[in-house]
Amino acid sequence: MAQFDPRRQPMRIAPHALTAVAAVSVALLAGRVYQPAKAEEAPPLSQIEIAQLEAQAFAAGGTPAGLTAPEAIPVQIRKGETFEQAVRRTGIAPEEASAVAATLSNAMDVSSMRAGQRFETAIAKPRGGRGDARLIGLTMRTGPASQLTVSRSFDGALRLRALEEKVTHETVVLNGKVEGSLSRTARREGAPAAIARVAGRLFSHKFDMDRDIKSDDEFTYVFDRTVTENGRTIDSGELLYAQLKGVTFYRFQPAGAREAQYFDATGKNTRSAFMRTPLERGFRISSSFGFRRHPIAGFRKMHQGIDFAAGMGTPVVAPADGVVVEARRWGGYGNWLRIRHPNGLETGYGHLSRYGSGIRAGQRVRQGQVVAYVGSTGASTGPHLHYEIWRGGQRINPAGVRTEEGTVLAGADLAAFRAEKARIDRIIASGGERRSGAPAMAGGLRPART
Image 1 (cartoon, rainbow, N blue to C red):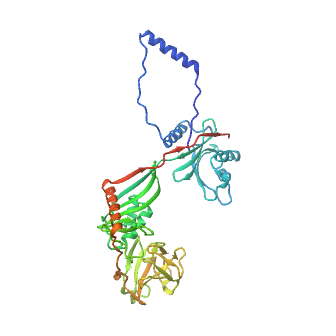
Image 2: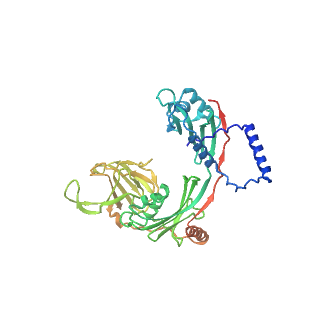
Image 3: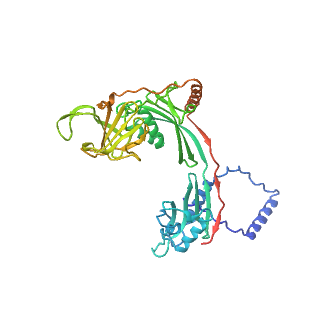
């Protein structure tokens, strides 16, 4: 983590002069002049590679006498604490902490650092346990692909360096087979959480994510992301394409539309007016609509909803746009939520652990918005979601609800969609796409007194 710059050794003239005279004499005696061998020029190193070599060189030089090997110590500035005070908590002397703060102040305003700011330090401690520790290096990230480092050279001086990694913008084609849940599989295969969440929400319009998705079902995601030269993802873009069990989604924004939407290969909007389930991942149906033996009362009773067994705190999303009618405690339902939708339907959610941000009576919600979290409040034997759908004041079977899908593109929108679809298809055929980003940049080295 810390970057180091070994000090060059001074050149001694006399030994080198004698060596040169001896070499010329040998060449003259041999009756010819020595021609040096030619070597191929090595490719230039990046700033990150240079910094790594410097760190290795310092490590090879050994640990300062009387001190242990440097130990990585993460630090977070606490409330009411200055940067210098936070550094002192690593065990170094007050004057050394002041020197570190002074060095870092050459590149940023250390007095403006707020509570929560994190940085890494490398600290060597006295072997006998007595005395102050010594700071060997400090690294602070200043941006998604940039950082400042303070390191100690062999002569004891503190040196400051600013590094910015090269970034690459990628369009990734991710292929996989479902193992367990679709969302967890996609995450294991490298899909960012946001991408896995959007794809799961799209497929929930078409599938019962518990019953319809099986192991070994193949899926493909295409999405944008930005990665640093060491492979760290610093930004994930949009999901451009998703395919599962023959169902495809292409991202496209029609002219005049406020946001992009998803369409099938023919240009038909694949967004249904109502999602099949209010949970996107990590659930199973534990009780269906109809008569059953009540798990608490013990006798047969009409179950006027569907129960989804899920982990405590699993997000619950609105299956369609609507307005919150109730968000309150309601008897055996525990924390209860009811939403009225424009298609004449209402949905109800019971046993919630808590509500989503800003959810209260009168609040408008959008399809896919997190409105609550799974819990076990009220008459409940364990974490699950009780889900109801009402039509005309009467409860109906949620599994039987079917609604029409969106419109079909036409005219100029359809032509533009086909062009975008062809572009995405080419990316899929080629296995992905990469575009270079900003070049790496390095700040100058600035020695500071200790």
